[in-house]
Image (tube, rainbow, N blue to C red; front, top):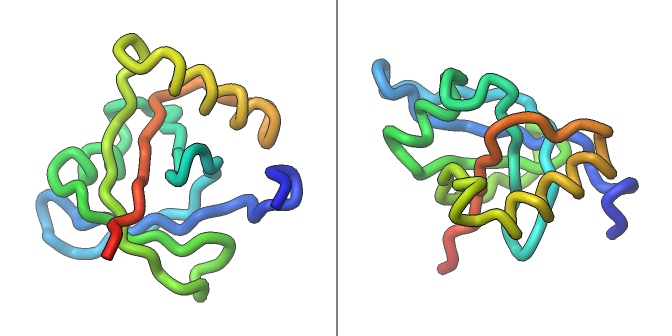
Length: 112
């Protein structure tokens, strides 16, 4: 499926780092090399990024809240140590949304 015809939103459910309760947001995303990538404009200050750093197990639904949930592990992408990956993800965000300024977070589906 071409990126421009792909769903615009992903629904990310994290576990609240203080409350332990599920927290869901609707967010732009791109896919690259069998993973999903999000861009945090608030970088490390975003609550959802803090939640992923505290507990990397997340659930996503692509395209709608009702889509089949997918269990993933999340992590932030180091733009210096992973410059090639960060550039490729930025290019995909720029092509899909015309924007890529932020911290990239990778969501990789859990196999099995």
